[in-house]
Amino acid sequence: MDNGAMRRGGEWLKQVLSGPAGRAFIALVLVALVGVIFNAEGAFYKIATHRDALRQASVYGILACGMTLVIIGGGIDLAVGSILALVAVSCATLAIHWNWSSWLAIPACLLIGGCCGGLSGFTAARLRVQPFIATLAMMVFARGMAKYVSGGMKVSTAVQNPDGTYRYVDVPPLFEAIDRRILGDTVPVVTLIFAACLAVAWAALAWHRWGRQIYAIGGNEEAARLSGVPVVFAKLWAYVMSGVFAGVAGICQAAQEHQGDPEAGVGYELIAIAMVVMGGTSLMGGRGGMGLTLLGVLTIGYLDKILSINAVPEAGRLMLTGTIIVAAVLTQRRRRS
Image (cartoon, rainbow, N blue to C red; front, top):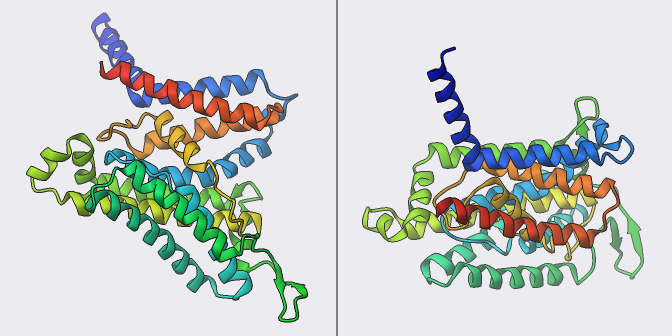
C-alpha cells in the first residue's frame, strides 16, 4: 500500500472516530476496559453478567428509542417514566385482576401509552407549550393516574375478595412469556423486544417520509414549515411513538416484576436521556439516529452493571449518570464550535 492510500485511510479513520459514532464507540470500549480492570474477581467474564446487563438495560433502551425520536425533532419527553408506571399498573390490573388475554391487554396498554404521548405532543406542538413544560405536566399527571388506578398500592397476584380477604392467583402467561429466557437460557425475551423496538424506530427514521420530516424540523423548524412539512403532525406523531414505546417498556416492567408498581419508572427518563446523549444524538435536534442510541444504551447499561458488580452504591451510580450527561453535552458543543 502506497503512502497516499495510507494517508487517506488514516484521514478517513480520524474522521470516523471524531464523529458522533466514533466517540460513542470509543466510550463503549473504555467502559469495557473498565470492566476488564475492575472485573469483581472474574464476574465480568461470566456470560450471566452480560446477559443480565442486557436484560437490565433493555427497558431503559426501549424508552430511549422513543426519546431519540422526540429529541431529533427538537423536543424532550420527561413523562416516559410516569407513563411506564401507569401502563405497568394498568397491565397488571388487566392481566392479573381482570384476567384479560394478551390479545386484549397488550393493545389496551399500548393505547394508554400512545394517548399519553399524544396529549403531550398536542400540548407541545399544537398549543405551542414548551416541550419541557408540556411533558413535565404529563409526568405529574400520569404518575397521579398510576396511583389512582392502583389505589396507591402495588398491583400483584394477591387479589382481594369481596369479603376483604386475599387470595393468590397464578402469574399471567403474558408475564411468564416476557420474563423468560430462550436459546439455552441465554437471551432474555425482553432484550429481543428492545431489539424489535430499535428496528421499528430505525425503519421509521430511515425509510419513512416522516423520518425525513422530523430531521428537518429538528434542524430548523421554521424552514421546514416554509418547505411544506406538516410540523404539528410530525411532532405530534413523535410524541405518540414515544408514548407507545413507554407503554411497551411498562408491559415489560410489569412482566419482569410480576406486578404493577405505581412508583416504578422514577428517574428512568434521566437514564433514557443519558443513553441518547451518550450515543451522540444532539439535544439541539436534527442530528442523531438509532445506531447511536444503541451504542449509548450499551455504554450506560454496561457501566451500570460494572458499578453494580463492584458494589458501588446506587447514589454514586446516579451521580455518575448526571456527570455523564453534562460531559456528553459539552463534547457536542465543542464539536459544533
